[in-house]
Amino acid sequence: MSSPVLAVDGLSVTFETRRGPLHALRDVSLSIAAGEILGVVGESGAGKSLTGTAVIGLIEPPGRIVGGSVTLRGRRIDGLDVKAMREVRGREIGVVFQDPLTSLNPLLRVGNQLEETIRTHLGLSRGAARQRALGLLAEVGIPAPAERIDHYPHQFSGGMRQRVVIALALAADPVLLIADEPTTALDVSIQAQITGLIKRLCRERGMAVMLVTHDMGVIAETADRVAVMYAGRVVEEGPVDAVIHRARHPYSRGLMGSIPSMRRRMDALSQIDGAMPRLDAIPQGCAFHPRCPVRVEACHHERPDLAGPPGHRAACLLVAAEAAHAGA
Image (cartoon, rainbow, N blue to C red; front, top):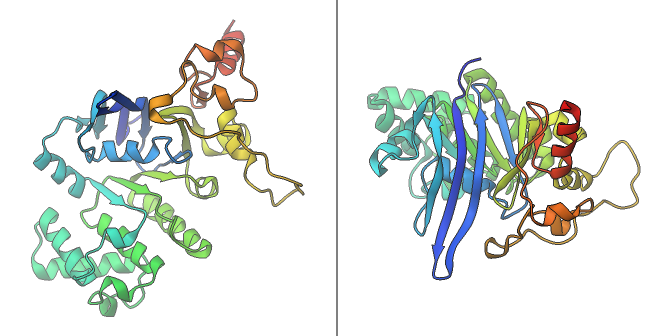
């Protein structure tokens, strides 16, 4: 088996405060192969966006990586200096953020922004950069790219702006695309277009994609595998179909139960009582146990690791016990 494009191993991030360190990420491990989409899902505060931020080297003080490693195509990048990391982020890693307006300069034509990125990272001439920019706009589905290339961001709709941002992220032909909530600010019909575009580009270009979202519908339609995060840890990871239909962690099952079904009538959606714990109040043992409907006494003081069959694991004492029994 070929090595993954991205490998995150035991990543831990803390934020220093006057009251001591806050542990925002704890021992996060994940990997993404070429041509694969990994969905990273969880509630607000779970640590999913912070994981992407750590990968692209944008953790700012008082936050810092205190453990683990981030490897891109076999090369560690978590210890690179600012200049070297900026080159990696522009050339090998493309990033799509939630709000396209924060990624585009409102005072510059979109063509100028694309051409500048292309020339910076690929060293092409002005004419060649413009031709590549036109090709990228066409690739992401911008109609009449020869006309739209000289328009300003405000002249595009929200969905078209997000397409421009995706073109910008692809400008240097990266091997990894990190899409952080790329559809949240868009209408449902436009969301489907953007997720379909990301999926198509992943297949055609053979990129690895980390898709960060809180929307399980987006995960179901787009991802190949999914990592479910809770309180700064990965609590379940596996193929998207297995996690959606046969979730092993109680938190994952709660997320799935909150999705309306088109196939059967439901009087009410199930819910997960309580809320995500604050970073300064993460419970001992399994962080989910105060909200868990199947917790046992050991959950209050034992913090489980991912366990279960290879390819579909969960960080739950009940899953660990099942795996131990199956192997006995």
